[in-house]
Every structure is written in structure tokens, then in C-alpha cells.
Image (cartoon, rainbow, N blue to C red; front, side, top):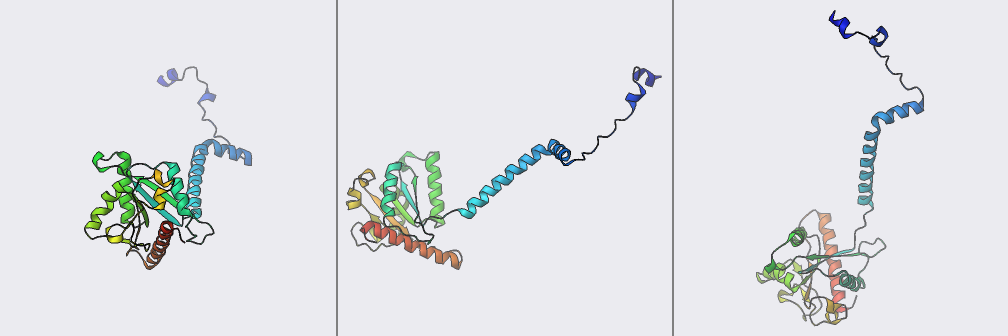
Length: 238
């Protein structure tokens, strides 16, 4: 009785189970059916595949520079001045990795002034500098007076240094001959040099005694290349 009341006005045909949809038979209908149910999964997978492909291509085709130089200063050096320094260094650069092209990377890390404390940017740069120096990643360093006093002078005064002497004479050398200060030199007195701090300290760190044999051999080649570049830059002679 209750069933009849609930189904009042419903025909027997309407109570029959709906027939299952026919499976797509043609390639076009099969594709349309697949695209309808799996469109977003397909698009998402394509995006992931594209990103992975780009990353792999960049890793495989990445060209390593012949030199990577860190310019460590208290204040940010403007792009034009960095470009002038880069040009001056490039005059004495050579194709170290023999790939047919000379490339020199120059990065400015502005670590701020100690008395001013650290902000987010300077903290990031200081952390990066510490990481690079600990890993012996960069071999050619340039410090202004403020940064040299903060990062280098204390270790030099304590008799510790992993920087190597540059054979360019004694003029301009710091105590212990770890760095060459360009103050009063023709480079510092040049038109573009006057836009930099009066004191810039140039130094090359020695090879790291870590890693496997291949790493140590490559490290020695890098150090030697940086040493020659620094000496040629300072003396003007390749």
C-alpha cells in the first residue's frame, strides 16, 4: 500500500533501469570520451612533463663560466660600475675550460655595515658568502674596506688564511700578502675606478683539501687560472 502511494503517477517504463551507455566505437568518439573524463589529468601531466623537460635541458646545456668572481661590498655597487670592472677583468681573461668562449661571472654581495645591523637582504648575502667560502666555491674575491675588515682582517691577524700570495711585487699588499689593495694604483685612479671605493682588496683562495681526486685536480686548475687573471689585471701584463 505504501509502495503504491509512493509510486503514484510513475509508469512501469520509468521504473526500468536505464540502459548502460554504449561504449565509443570510432577513434574520434573514443578520444572525445577520454578527453571528457581525463582532460585535467592530461593537461596537468603535460605541464609537469614540460617543466621537467625544461629543467633537464637547462642542466644539460648549462654553460659554466671560466671564472666566478665575488665582489663583496658594504653597499650595492651600481650596474654600470660592475660592468666596467667586468670589462677590465675580461681584458685578461682566457678560455679556461676550452669551450671556445671566454665567460666571466661577477656577482656583487652587499653585506651591509656592521654597526647598522642586518636586514633581510644583507642577512641573505652574508649567509651566501659564508656558504660559498666554506665550500671553497669561489676562488677570486674582491672586498671593499668595510667588508675586508669584517670578513678577512681578523683571520689574518690571527695567523689564519687560506689565500695565496700574488706575485706582483710588494706594493699594495696587506700584512701577510694575502690580498692586494688597489689604493693609489692606476686602476683605482682610472675614470671608472674612481666610482668604486678607494680601497678594494683582491685575493685568490687556495685549492681546497677536500673532495675526491678529480675535484682536487679541478680545484687546482681553477685556482691557477684565478691567480693568473688577478696578476694580469693588476700588472696589465698577460
